[in-house]
Image 1 (tube, helix red, strand yellow):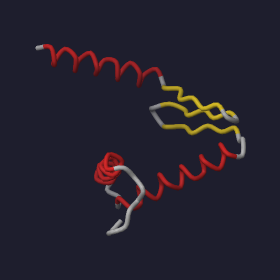
Image 2 (cartoon, rainbow, N blue to C red; image 1 turned 90 degrees about the vertical axis):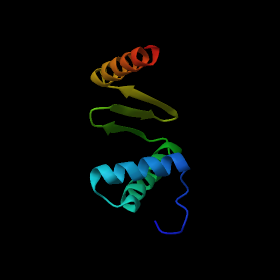
Image 3 (cartoon, rainbow, N blue to C red; image 1 turned 180 degrees about the horizontal axis):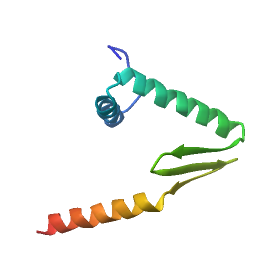
Image 4 (cartoon, one colour; image 1 turned 135 degrees about the vertical axis):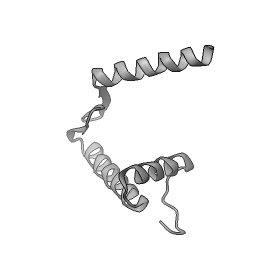
Length: 93
């Protein structure tokens, strides 16, 4: 990404950097993909399209005209809840 701004927050920049490391892809490729996805989402929402974004092993972002909701898969919710209970237990020790 060099010296120009991506328009992302510092936190988002860190997430993109971590994803790039994990996927062994350049950070600018990750940012480009995210921005392209957001542009498609903005277009679809502004034109009243009905669409779903499926996030493998996570859930589905359901968009119906001007209503947007995230539906998480049950396995993920259970895993997050279990991790939270574990984290809470460790913090209380």
